Length: 117
Image 1: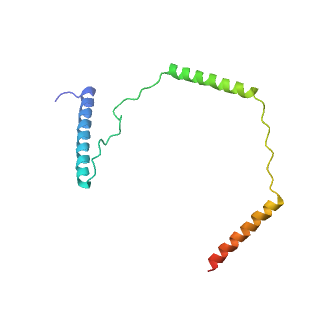
Image 2: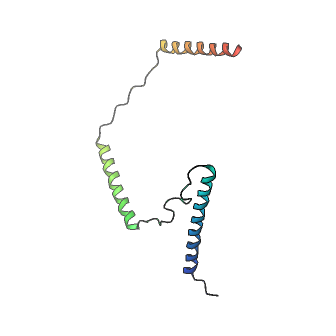
Image 3: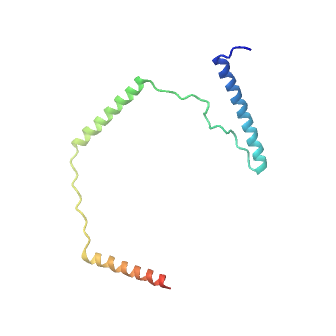
C-alpha cells in the first residue's frame, strides 16, 4: 500500500468535492423536473473555491496613516467654524393645548361608545 502524503490526500479531497458538486447538480436537475420549475444551477455559493486576498501589515499601516490624516483635517476645519446658535425651544400655547385635550377626549368618547355597542 503506497504511503499517503499530504499532496495525495488533498488531491483526493478535491476529486471527491468535484464529484459531489456534479452529483448535487444532477440532483437539482431531477428535483426541477419533479416540481416543474427550472433546475437550480450550483448548490455551492459563487466564489466558494477562490482564496481571499489578504493585505500586508505595511498596507494596513498606510491605510491607517491616511485615515488619521483625513480625521486630522476634518477636526482642524471643525475647530475654525463659528459655533451655531441653539434654536429656541418651541412652546405650546394654552389654546393649542386645550384643542389637543378636547380632540383626545372626543376620540376616547367615540372609542368607548363603539366598545359599548
